[in-house]
Length: 317
Image 1 (tube, rainbow, N blue to C red):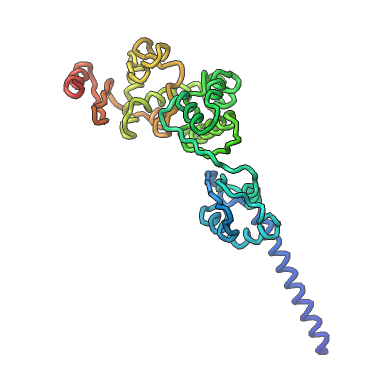
Image 2: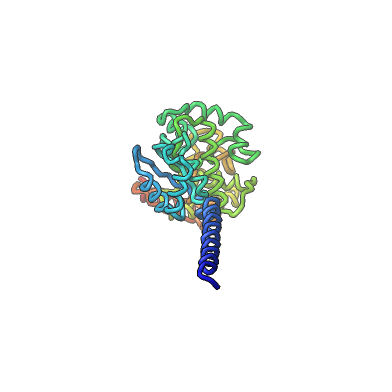
């Protein structure tokens, strides 16, 4: 075989090898663009500084687990021609985003510029105050609370009497342009996510609503996470015995007052934390029927009224 033929065959083999490599790389690159960084759905807020360099942005995304390969994502930004369109500000990403979704968020004109923190135990009026202080129409939330169709839509429960209990206490980053409706829906979605994490299901039933009411009382009565399951146990014990609950936290309104009415209040009295919800679903098995909170915040539990009265005299008088 002549040298020219050998050279020709070698060039053909090299060309096929290069072609195969290019096709394989394109396939892998396209697969990268459509593959989630993680199967876990977790919120991650990242602030993009004004004039921050593209390599720095990409490194931050990789560090936070939003992308799996910084080199390929960098090339994707450059090839897309959108590197200059990245918006400075606070962006919300999810760990199960694909690189395409990450780029869409980076160039989105919507950046999260308002921070809203709802503390566990806040009722809807306190949540409305938080919204007002952040520059939103807090009164609008109270109006939505009277809107039966919105309450059902937001809570996902047809028999919900209000949004109370469903506005999950957490820190939220939202846009100044967001409507109160969308913020309420965001809080309710967070509640639904926590409920699913706790119970393993999405369907919210009437018994779940009762437990949510219990959790709201636990949140107000228990001063420490370790006491929540015991307080829940006391509540269920008193309900089983047909006793008045007599929870001080319910005295703010005659309709909710468990000194005046037997059984649970008609709806939650506040928005409880995950720990309080967990206590309502997994109460401590106990014979306790009473408890008091000492001035230092610690709690004393008792089985009999006589013992309870003795604790009152000893610790509170």
